[in-house]
Length: 148
Image 1 (spheres, rainbow, N blue to C red):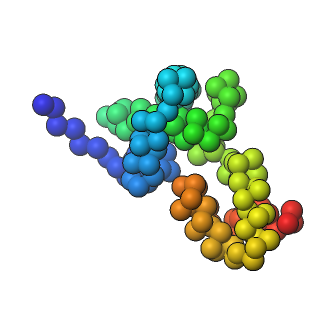
Image 2 (cartoon, one colour):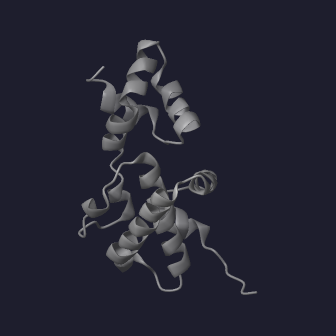
């Protein structure tokens, strides 16, 4: 058996996905339909090809795994069209526009909870606990303060 040392710091740095979230995504992947799995692997390959300039020699495994995790995230959130990934994207974090994801996927939830009197801090915790979407309470306030 080949021993491989995984650089978890590098994996987190390029994907912004922590250990707990990785395990959640992998569990969700198990439940995906064949069509969703195919979408994940198509997106993973596109991410790998278009972002390979960010890959560090000797860290190819972590890089490829990060592509896989991010593809799962996008397919799970139904937030991406495979052809919409920009070739000019300089980093993986640019692929995730949190404001757009918040407004597209969580706006009704945020409005409902705020109308019930939930604080921004508690709402941030709820988004993480219920949807595994990590966002600061200050950012939530900035995005939705004007709308609500």
